[in-house]
Length: 277
Image: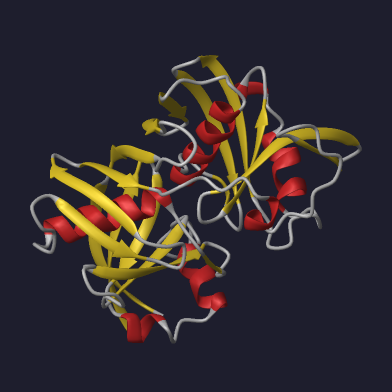
């Protein structure tokens, strides 16, 4: 089976975007993993499948498959890339795109120039929203025994689950060691994305994210949102925050409880191609 795709990225967080949903439904988890292989396949962090709208007033419905072949609920940088592709192909309305996904409705502002802002909705701090069985609660934080040490973190759902650990320096943070251990900790019933956040000042954080089913990525949109939400809830951050990731900077704006959170950054097309599956 031959499929056509568009390769896109947001700060190096890269995707293949498919607009053939009938073909995508025939792709198995093993085939997604083969396509994600950076040496023998196309290579990507996530595959995004654009489907026809399922609700009135939306331009598209999209699905997300991680590099391990598992379908997940949401992807912030992926949503921005899809919105930019819809703009480039003439499917946006006056610089705005309304999309639907397993994680809920997404509104995107696509003014052009490769910069896209998306309304990621309300951060949900309820442990059940992140499929988390809390242990050792400390106010808005939780602790778990991970790899022989006690790790303290915040939990939030941005349509997908995130655990955010505050660290003094992201460069020396134990991402490769603690990331996979916390991702698969049995307290997280559907695994979790793990963010390591360094607060530079109230308007700037540095962040590395070990993504569920992928590993550490160059950037993670929902990870940036989750980190700012946790940091702001703890009183560490202001309303608008620059999030510096290995691949570059995103901007997250969250006025606070009961208000939607916005994610802004670049979305680019790398190339278009075909591949036999």
